[in-house]
Image (cartoon, rainbow, N blue to C red; front, side, top):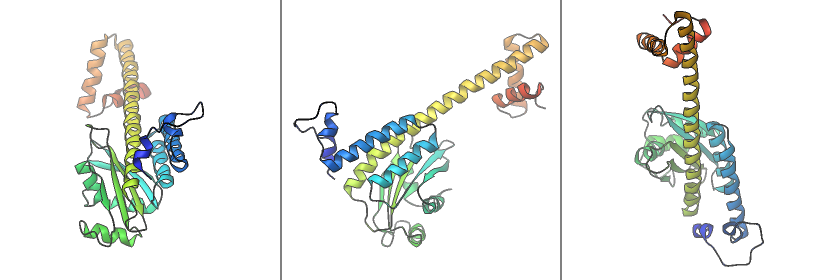
Length: 254
């Protein structure tokens, strides 16, 4: 597929009511563009991280020359990995080889914010142990695409795998890049919304706990908050959890 065709604007007569950038494409590329548009809607409407990346890997199987696909996401400020979506258990095995500092294309893609392609695990010598294990799992070619929204840190990697050597060409890479950008924005947005929701929930809990202390001990708001904060520090417990325990038990943690 010509990647330039996806963004082309040919001057042709078009049916009324359809977007010009979709109508101008050849039929097979038109269908792909429509699937991308549908994917964008699905990612926008997804309810969480797992649903978001699940839609991405399923789309990858439809649009790309891959046997398996998966997404690995960074957690704990990039020091750990979680694997929320794979299309086959073998992908999780491949990811596990690189968890905890293991060498391989996933690690390099995250570290360098770069696309990493393995044309053939039988002839690639960059990570011999990784390549031998992955080849034994039936995978011959790999394309790892970083999930990033620009200057922000890499949030994860979209991994594409094929049982055939040299399965991924320039067109596959171009489509994977677009897919990765969709996924990056969706994951970043979902995480941001989750963080905001958790912050709002925490403020509500702390406010309820402060109200209990103020009523029980005739305290003002500043004093009630100071007590919660001191218990949080003394017990090495998150302020939110201190508030939750006070609400649940009507007692502060010991």
